[in-house]
Length: 459
Image (cartoon, rainbow, N blue to C red; front, side, top):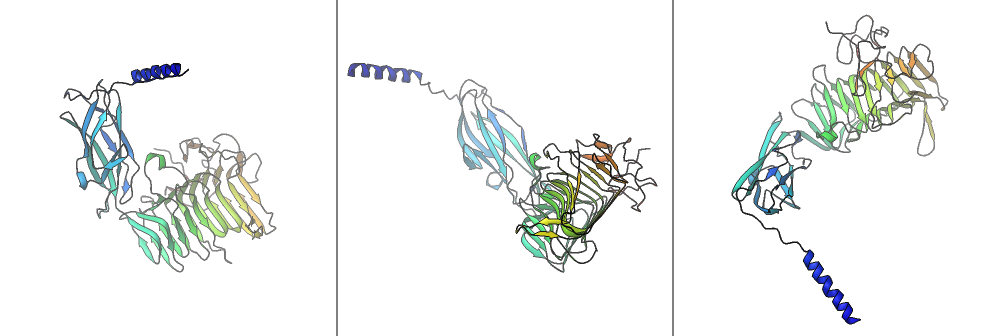
């Protein structure tokens, strides 16, 4: 038995040894070339002091023999804003990496740009130099840096934000009570992941038709440019009044405007015009027992609510377009919701009177019923809908209803262009309510179009 066992063991060892590959010969032949997956690694605009998304390229060895890459280094060395990562090693210079024949080497690159105290974006360049067998080649590294005003968990009073360079909010920023923040035309406000802007006083966002105010996330790379849910929202707290937002683009957050400012008057707590709210993971406008007026405004691509006005309040919407057509939000439920009540976490039902006016608006989406009301709280509930286009199977007196695909006549709802085409049903069907221009500042004619956009044919 032992003889058989030792014979089996000996044969197994021989077989294992015979299967071991010969170590590939490393060639020093100067005629052996390496190739690269990219000649340039390009980064999107980066805020200074914020680490970039990691980019990558590969070095290929198309030859049959192995090559020792003697040096992979950044041309600017220790002065570079870039760093390279190879096989878990991060440095500005990495030596002696062997690439076997027909194989490749993955090179990771990231960049953290130091501030330059400049208002305009600036170019940050370097290159990765690769040396082997007396040969040298390189891959260019290109990024744009942007200096900014950085705000981290700060409260402020009676400030003016200008368009000189972006404002970047980490965690939170608070407009204190009895204070006003004025945001000038062209200003850019970027909120980091999870950050929010709280308003207990007053905010005046004063963009114009040629210089919108931008409020969005801090990431600019392709996967994040339109991704929802990347920051919290703009929160209007109890006591906040006389807020104005015009010509603003608010995008890629959880809630565009979250308004909770109950009071005993009908003066509008928040007035928004000529603005766009888009790509929100929860809601465009979410308000509780508040006073809100919106006109010449579009809200699109939200997960739960385009507009939710809950627990009563005083609301007015004129010449607005509310639309949901994104394939990544497969929500067929009503996205335009008005109630006189809300159930609190304590199971208590909070109720208040609700007053709504909506005129010359478009309410559209994937489901057959986009608008819903609830007066279950028993409070006074008055809703006046006049001359709107609403996605619904039901007739709503004084309005246009349909479930026909693209019934309003949007130019390209799949591409999120909710302006009107030349044959749009919404053309010339508005009633005159003394709003003289549209969302882009284009003058409306004597037969205004329904929705935020006025169609003007080219002459």
